[in-house]
Length: 223
Image (cartoon, rainbow, N blue to C red):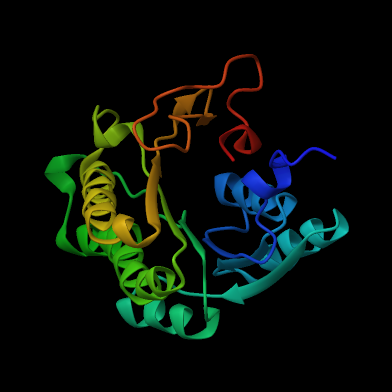
């Protein structure tokens, strides 16, 4: 019998718990399904209970393990509440976000604050709450969903583009803080093509590969 490592031993996630914010739809749902398919126990956090239930049922029907957590990440208190109920998490995927994009001349402070609360504050709070436990256990992944607008503003990028540029900065400082203790951070930069998410760089630090082919805009290709 060969003693070579198997794909399961190299890439399998059995015994790991993954928390996916915004995991009930779109890119987050595709990522949640992919993590469950790799063997992880997936916690799907979102605001709408019916959407959470549907996503959890889909994963379970495919043989995966999933639970739903209703969460409101529009405040720091909501992010702390989610960390409280999630417990020990090995993989955090911060996919929840809002995209309010009035023209810059019309961008007001409430819109700015609402955008930063979900797109930046929530990933920060969850990282601060969950990353120390990952470091203690010697394994952790912090994955942030960014955007091409972090680098190339277009279409009234406004507060949204700023929030995504900031979350990439957050990912870099998290890597500096935690990577020596088994933690890794990744970012993903979806774009737009035919009004659908376009896959970004591969989920490996420093890689900028994009899937090819007619289905490259599907959420599961990003996952």
